[in-house]
Length: 391
Picture 1 (cartoon, rainbow, N blue to C red):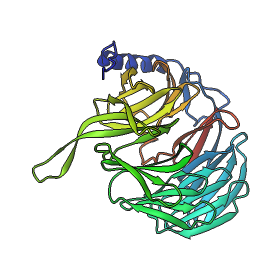
Picture 2 (cartoon, rainbow, N blue to C red):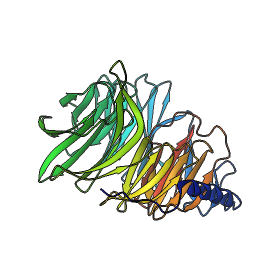
Picture 3 (cartoon, rainbow, N blue to C red):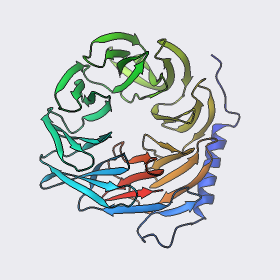
């Protein structure tokens, strides 16, 4: 397949990106009504600070859904789960879950809040915080809630597999053991049939949503320990890595990464796009697929896979990015900023500067940069003991 080539040399694009950041740094549009310790708005950053909340302990997790922001911290009594109205910032309820884990994972699904606080899975009513169920799933601190359907919540347990739990009772319905390695899970209805797609190792498996029975599987190449995937409109987008075998026959990963598009209705590959560097993550929105590698950020056309633009990024970017109303938002670890770029052409719009050399200098899970359109478009993120909402 013919590859699309960017007409401007990537090194020049990187230089342009540096220049744009420098120019933006001279323009301070911070609002005088905002607290002195809030981030400064530099350049034409599209959003303004709406509200923030400070907590007694470091935030461990966050989720958005149905016009509410759910936060999780850990204190002496256990996991403190708290709900806030996204429009006003007012606290709606607070619930303390017993346990002694060091991590929390939260997902909002319809009118329920699901929490992994090892070793248990909890479900609470979104409006009241009342406990619906709690069940010991022998979870570890690294396990995560990966996806959901009308019937199930799917939990990925590290080095074990995918577990399907009843959304309303917490009972285990089925499990698929896959062992060590990165796992991605995507439920989808194809031709009126509800399937769950599991990517692990060199295989994509389609299993029945109700009982986990194997419907079909496809060898896709090495997904790799940093593999990622996305789903949109019946098309599965996933990464594979170039590999070679060492003298002792152990798999070693090379730098190259490919993004492939698979039509789940016909089980046929639509296109393949060579990224050229080790991939980190992807996001799909507005007919574009945004990919971040160890050196670049690029947008490709969803239908053809052809690159629309690509830039070197002089950043240590956390994944995944957020795309909202045609704007890409990135977290930059190295300069402690949140950066806004146009999805259309990759042009830099502006940034939030926290002016704190240690702001992002601790482990940040992938729930730290979230967006929602209810009740209006918002961007939410947290730092240490504070959560920020921008609109």
